[in-house]
Amino acid sequence: MRLAILYDILPETGYRNDGNPLMVWAALKRRQEKGLLEVDHLAPREDINLFGTYDAWLDVDWGEDGLMSVIPYKVIETPHPAIVW
Image (cartoon, rainbow, N blue to C red):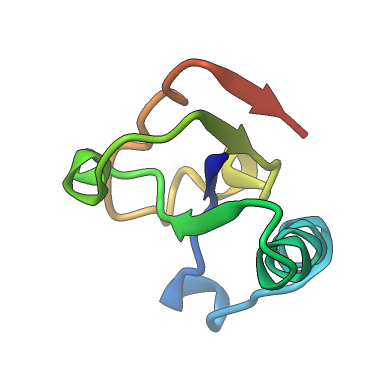
């Protein structure tokens, strides 16, 4: 299974990469190391189609609702099929 996890690490937050998104990413990468799936981490921008197709898209809450004033791009809607975490 090929899975994409969507969240961003912004300079406006001091490049914070912690909490739920990081824990989910780390857990998925451990499964990738065992050959159980393939996972990519992408920022939720318009150019995500450059990386091919995915079996599912994982939308992890990274606090984007509170960061909208500093996110320097329009956050896309999660493609389908989507898993919301």
